[in-house]
Image (cartoon, rainbow, N blue to C red):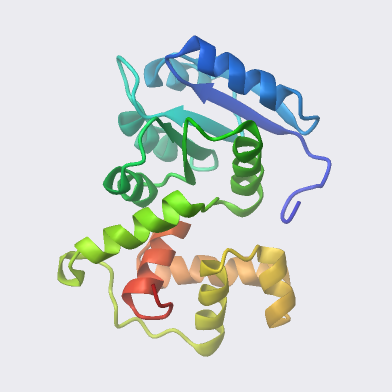
Length: 223
């Protein structure tokens, strides 16, 4: 509802090799009037074939699947369909896996124990704001930062950001929506989005998660 029409229907696809889990998610999401389930697949290969014919807004992607898993599928989706938001699903709360997923373009990460309300919340958030951070993703990103030495990173830490860019980056790290940031800094949402894109270019990051990691590494926000 930030960058999209409030009554827009979000098209969702799910890839998971457990039919029971797929059915549960499909049933709970389909009961929402603003969600339309458009495709389901048992593995990444099947999903990529479906994406040639159906274009969802959001994909729920299981990490562990036969034939082609989520780890192999995520970069392919991002390369072929950069506009599709991807929420990774896993049985495990593995920090290194989560931060790896976020770095290669995942828009969120949920464990399969997540309730239907949280899955719905994540779908809406990535659709409207590009990302959905929760305790899992935040802890993973921060623990990933603690174990990574800055010298190993390709992120340039001596980037010159102006005051407005730093303010907007801090607000983004506080999980404020584009609309909320626009109100706080007294700019239009479109201008805020332009600054966000400029920040990605300046810092050499590709995703919102990358920007958050940059902000922590550069000391712009304190972990």
